[in-house]
Image 1 (cartoon, rainbow, N blue to C red):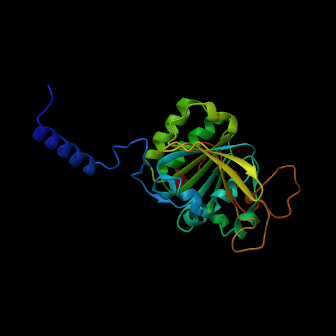
Image 2 (tube, one colour):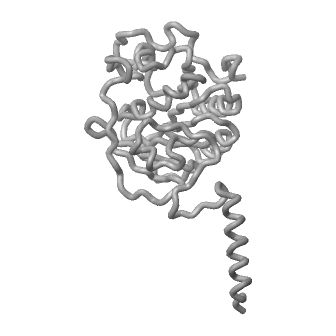
Image 3 (cartoon, one colour):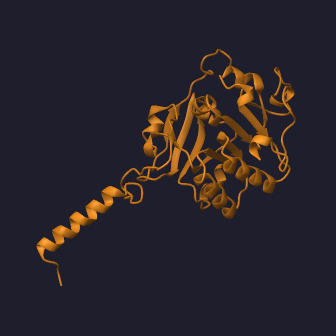
Length: 259
């Protein structure tokens, strides 16, 4: 039996009232979603326009799926890292190459703001990531993992939701077909003077086509062009991150600030 017009109008008004008080709890798939937590601008206006709240969300697992390592992912993240490093430390967990100290310094990221964690097993890396997130003393965590089980991703996402740390999980592009609890997944492919970005998953309408994002050819505030990460086999032209700091921290032996 249909409701009287007056009752229907009252019901619609009541629903609208509830919706207006819960802006983060209700989301329509054809609208750009919002995050309850903080957001850090990416430093690229074209990318900010495609992301909910206009930037990288804190308290969430963000996946970057790469066609190949070194295709521009560090230049993409550099503006956000510069913002975070002004106040808090940045953790590099299992990077594929040795962090290049001179390049980080030239980029404006002081070495004392960096914490490099190297583990022998994936399970130790995942454990370390959870401890960093739970401790909350670091502003950003970059984690490289070629293979991660869905259960481990869910644990990391839950840990991220309980913190205000920015968490990027960097994985191969082949992981794109795997399910993930991450609310934001981007694939990156190399392009001339930039990258091709495909928004595989976001809290908003589906973005079916990849778009080109130009990246700066040189590190801001300097003319240095040294890579932030360098291959272990290459002869370093500058001291690597661990030359002036303590050896890489292993799981179970984290710095006191992270215990």
